Amino acid sequence: MKKVDYIIVGLGIAGISLCEQLQKLGKSFVVIDNGLEGSTAKSGGVFNPTILKRFTAAWNATVFYPVAVNFYHQLSEKLHQNIFVETPILRIFKNVEEQNNWSVASDKRELQQFLSTEFLKNTNTSVDAPFGFGKVLGTGRIHTANLLLCYHNYLIKKDFLFSEDFKYEAIQQNENSVTYKNISAKKIIFAEGAKVIENPFFPKHAIIGNKGEYVIIKAPDLNVAALLKGPMYIIPLGNHQYKVGATYSRDDYGTDPTEAAKEEILSKLKTFITCPFEVIRQTAGVRSTTKDHRPLLGSLDENPNFIFFNGLGSRGFMMAPLLSEILFNYLEDNVPIPQEMDIRRML
Ligand SMILES: Cc1cc2nc3c(=O)[nH]c(=O)nc-3n(C[C@H](O)[C@H](O)[C@H](O)COP(=O)(O)OP(=O)(O)OC[C@H]3O[C@@H](n4cnc5c(N)ncnc54)[C@H](O)[C@@H]3O)c2cc1C
Image (tube, rainbow, N blue to C red):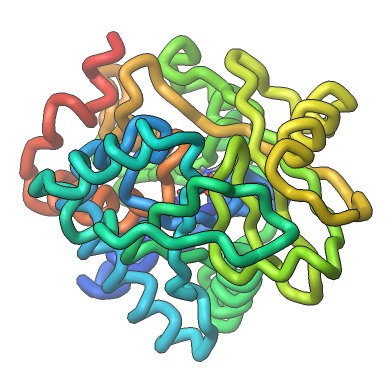
């Protein structure tokens, strides 16, 4: 029997953050992940502490942000990979009113470090932006494919990862431990993203699947290097390719790309770029969101050794590193999870 402190199910950004936290503090663990592409793999990887619809800060942005920046820089160094690339977001202004709203917002304490007060003029003839751009600072892109692959390989080398489907019926609960096949652990941490709805120990009503789709285009004349935010994001991938999206479809756990989403994305895209492009492919993933837009951490009374790390919504990259610290402090030192993040609020 292999004995560890924790078994983690799922290796998206939640699982990775947790592995890093456990290693930092000398705890042993194994990860079970089926290698199917979850939300992390299907995301845009945009690291953005602001909400650019209304020019506000994301929830607790000033608290999550520094921990996350530090985390991705350290992880890039450790894996010898440039996982986090700092890139500004250019938000296209629709009109003068939006420029004024931006100026007011950029004066607010929680937004000062993120919203540049200087407006940029549009010099790109392939982009339709007569009112120019507001520049968001401190933002970047997480190279998710690279991160997932490198972290997977890193754990395999250490013999910490089992690439397989987790079988819920194979868990055995003992008073102060759990066993799964030939592994015994103090606790098991479920970090399966939206797939948690297949977990029989999870209260299904606690999350809402929100499907998101992207279209990947090739546009040799677009020449956009920043993350461009108009009615949709344009995310440069290199080699003249761009990821455009994403859509939001509530109560939807489907993972197949749809014609309707493609049409929505392309019709919006054509309102702000003027150059020709070719559609390369389409992707779809599911965000694990909650009614109150807050994460789900911790355990339920009936199974105290089963821990959940879920509900990362559409801001998983910024929140996961600090949430893994909060979860760790709860598990190891009984530090209470803030009520607004505690899964028990859903009961
Ligand atoms: C279209 C889209 C765009 C997004 N864009 C952004 C963005 O730009 N910025 C941002 O911050 N966030 C974005 N998000 C949200 C972000 O992707 C999520 O918040 C985050 O990735 C969730 O990570 P996770 O680790 O909880 O879940 P996941 O990434 O889904 O990871 C769960 C892992 O568990 C595995 N798994 C599940 N069940 C089992 C099982 N039974 N056995 C074994 N393995 C299992 C899965 O295969 C997967 O590998 C986006 C999401 C989507 C869908």
